[in-house]
Image 1 (cartoon, protein in one colour):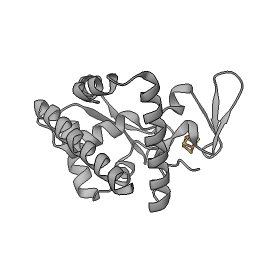
Image 2 (image 1 turned 90 degrees about the vertical axis):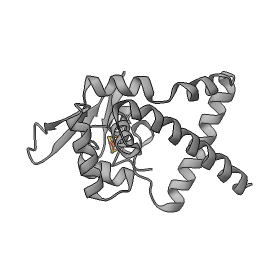
Image 3 (image 1 turned 180 degrees about the vertical axis):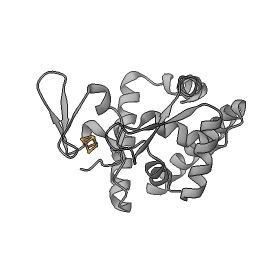
Image 4 (image 1 turned 135 degrees about the vertical axis):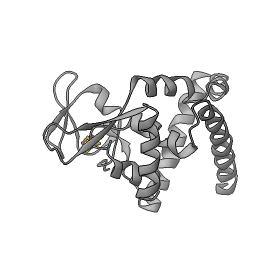
Length: 185
Ligand code: SF4
């Protein structure tokens, strides 16, 4: 069974990669540049640095730095110094970058294919894929970069306010939907 699942996921990933690559050609972007841009649109403020992008993509610092330079030159991202620690530089997605992602990620045909499933099936598929991802990350020892709301440090304050037990900072609801380099289970 694991071989069947591997074949399905591998094929799915391959088709998706081809679709995303085709979308990126409109801006002359390489797949790695698109992946970095997408990551920066879904990560939190503790995870939007060059080092975090390098860790997330599992590539060399040189490759990632070059990709980020391209994204910056195309005004898809910009740099911003941390207001408390000037040694830290955050990488933010520009409005132009957000627009590009809204039009291309996920690719339209992927969305159409998913929408052919009932809502129940979509939810079941999301739970199953999430379980597979979680177990696989655990097995390979790469458990960082999970969604904040599921992190062991995430604590709910009253009403719609959350608190990070690691950084000791307040988190908004939107923050809890993002992925984090410090995520732990
Ligand atoms: S609660 Fe966990 S995932 Fe969320 S910001 Fe803190 S360390 Fe990161």
